[in-house]
Image: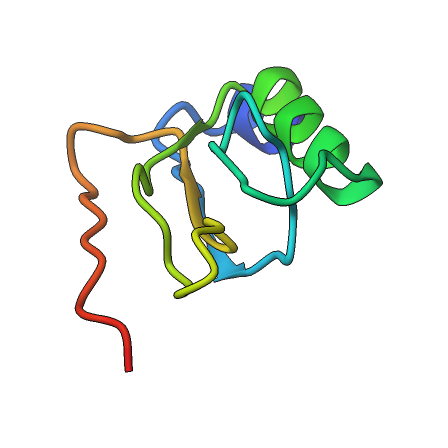
Length: 83
């Protein structure tokens, strides 16, 4: 990702999905922090991306569906009601 960003200053990244990552402090998970949560925060830090989802995406209270982007002024993330 870094090499693409260096080669093309207009490159933008958007990573969306159910990452099944738990991190108590960073994602306010009710489940204990796990290796996926640690890697997700590492990815965010190393890539310069921000994680946009700020509230739980599961009834359990965990935020598992995440949006990572390096163009936060262009992308927004909204969480609908839980089924």
